[in-house]
Image 1 (spheres, rainbow, N blue to C red):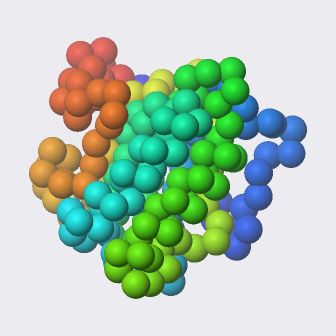
Image 2 (cartoon, one colour):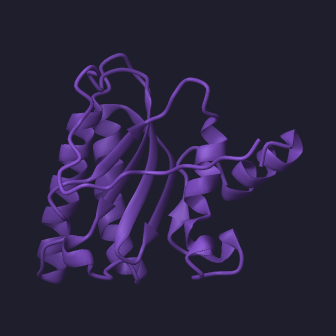
Amino acid sequence: MSCVISFVFTGNPGHLKAFDYIGPHRYFLTFCTYSRRRVFVTRERVDVVLLQIERSADEEQFAIIADVFMPDHLHLLIEGQAEYSDCRRFIKRAKQFSGYHYARSFGHRLWQRYGFERVLRDDEATLVVAKYILENPLRAGLVRCVQDYPFAGSRVYSLEEILESLSMTGSG
């Protein structure tokens, strides 16, 4: 099974009107840096932001299935772990906390105002989407091998588990 994921990017993407964003759902999120600055190029900068993303995930009961910090944006695949997991509140807290700590550490604004989210359908395989996210640096020509990119990972699986599970099932 191949996976083609596409987005329509707009100035203000908004949220789905008929969906409450609460509960055990999965989301593919993208946050772009302010003015598309290339800020995620050092471990120090990524770590300041990742710590706050993890804090927000813990507080809102989300698992971080996959994350990749591209130079000027962040991709996340998250999954609600409780009936009260609130994705909109996670997004708000993650951007607010990380933006605050980043500005304190590095002296400038981190995020663009709006981000992009896509709610995964029930028939979409989590690990297929995780692999797609983790392969972003490869597609961008930043590395030759997914495992060589220093700013990608998962708080649930190892990179090898994600990549090997797909090759074993033939769905990668």
